[in-house]
Length: 353
Image (cartoon, rainbow, N blue to C red; front, side, top):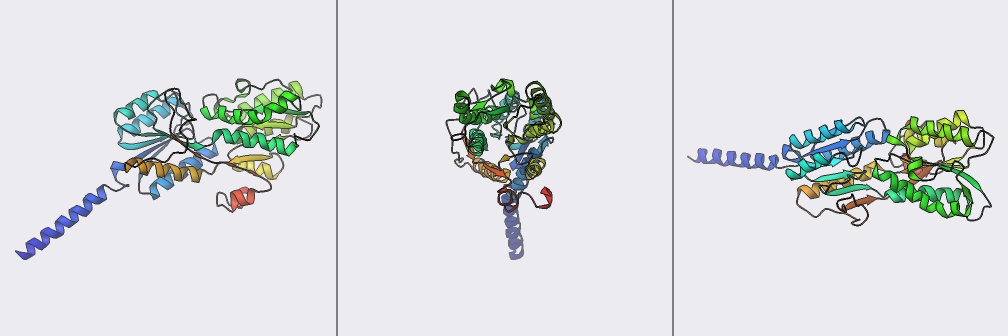
């Protein structure tokens, strides 16, 4: 009889342990869906890899999908995540307003949604937003130009052109406006001259952030405005893929003094260009920091805790102001890249050789 009781006690203990294990983060009850826009840009590969690694290290099951920059594909992938039992969705949208039906389905199943890096627009069913301070990205680029040209003291005038990002990406406007707000006084005073006359976001936007599109537009600007030997002193590019397009255009369509070129993301090709004098700087957004913050937010959501945010006023998606957590970016150039990019472990020296 005692033996039966002991066996029964052991079985009950084993069942209890199994039950507790079934409630752990790594169980099917806590699968996290991560939707990334494309593998075409290096940064999204790094974002996805970092997110998956961090979430799995925290014990979660992860469904990571890339949508090949196709809205219909992303919509289908997110709906599959909802139907497969994901408990939280982390979405970096291709086009901010394109996922409304999926967001409504998530809300119907009480699945919280975190917009990742790009704000999900025109839908109230967005619970949180995790990103870098996008306006600050632009101000860092603008201030770099001010400091490098010493615009407060130099006589000028200096010639400048702008290449911004995708009109469907809510962040692109923040990047451009941050930079333009810094440079606007110098444009209005005549110290900076936009030779092409293209200085509104609509005029300088680059659909899908495509390098080839940025290159084609830059080639047109150069042939129309700089073929006579006029120098372009600054080319303000919102990110590295567009900067790469401008750099390609300059290599084949320009004979003047090489301009200051800004960027964002510190893609390997662009860092190599910085070291070769073909790009001046790139705003560095350490995606490991953002991934860690998202993991913290996911855990807080699933544990029923208060989710940490640090901005509740800025990011209005057209239906609500989305509570946000903003990480701070910094800039890297040839002078500090070793400390920022290599010593931090983000890249190895061999990757940048």
